[in-house]
Length: 287
Image 1 (cartoon, rainbow, N blue to C red):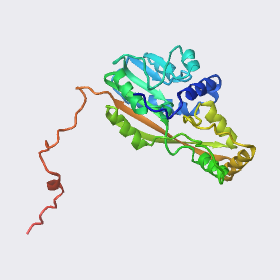
Image 2 (tube, rainbow, N blue to C red):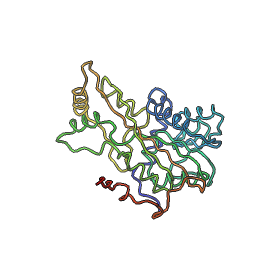
Image 3 (cartoon, one colour):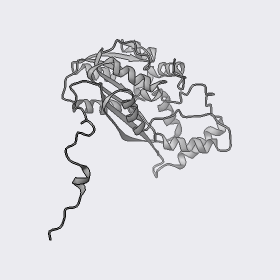
Image 4 (cartoon, rainbow, N blue to C red):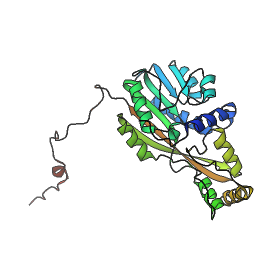
């Protein structure tokens, strides 16, 4: 049974296609994610060969991995991104690849808006060979506090549709990896602050990176001129002395492995040879 549509698949595809021509001018968040993913990959001592770039966007991560001598299959939900990268167009929760096709899957900037994220992670695990690695990053909960506060002020007293899709926090991300059957899961978060002169510059960046609201079944959140004026004024009220407002993005990074008999295994319950209570017991003072 298909998962209910939380994020509109059709809307995601349209927005990624719309963003493709000018993506380079707005893709700084994905650039930061790619840098973080490559740094984490540098700490891994094993070698990889076949890689899936899940949500390849402009192909920057694909290119960086190919420069390391890896064979990379790019794929994206957006037809334009997939075509430009000479890859495959597919939804992240409907992968067309056979089990065990890759020993490394990387993903930058897309998993937070996948309609069925638990299903997508399960499919990633199945597409990996035993002891294969998943490295992923996306914008997480706690992002865009200045914009959210300004929109709340602009909408005050008036009915408004949901203007932000739900975001995943770092604890939930780690739990999802475990539920999907990955081993040795690690989820961590890095903050990135960006300063904007007006709210319109921030909105232009979000549109340019295909990161605006993608909830299914929502009325498009058009803003009237009056609301736009209130929004810009509220955003400006949070400005620093130089007139620019600081906005924060929380980047969540995931690292996890597909199961393998060769991986370190936790000790069996009850196999300890010393008790914790005994270790914590205070020594008896000498008489």
